[in-house]
Image 1 (cartoon, helix red, strand yellow):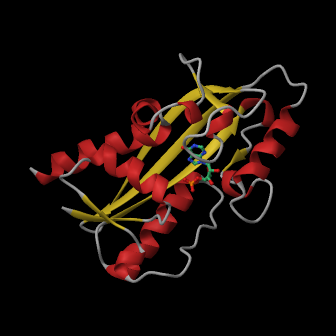
Image 2 (cartoon, helix red, strand yellow):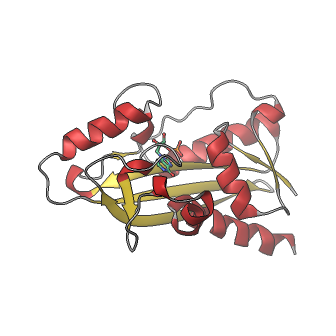
Length: 193
Ligand code: IMP
């Protein structure tokens, strides 16, 4: 089955494809002629995921899904949250975001945080939402070279390594996105039968 996924981020695409398996062929917006930036202007992860999926569905008429992820840090009242991509600057500057996060947590005892992913699926014109959460802590220094974004600063509960010190398979097994995508996969497999 072909399904359109609202991302041009190669990392995300391969993470999601690995979890969904060969039964699903992921198309990107570019594959479907959508080259403009997909609007993402809502104040919540749910709102953004739905906004992106609705936009793509209106543009292409295809079954599609979109995700939105935020890092929610307890001592920062849930920031950066829905603003995770643009925490430090207007662009997706991972290094600047990580620097600002460490700066804002300097001297704070409570380093608890969670990643939360929301996926909005539009299948046969109907909307469905899925959520995946992983709890962990923000460590003091960037550690590891794998992954992307806040991965070098996030150590999931039950591990002594950050996401950036894990293989893609290890990260997928515990990550927010892995959890949300496994729910999506179970739903898609069930509706295919
Ligand atoms: P998006 O909504 O998935 O594009 O995520 C927004 C921002 O959250 C990204 O630009 C990254 O900074 C961060 N982010 C999302 N997923 C991850 C992840 O798996 N690891 C680390 N950072 C992530």
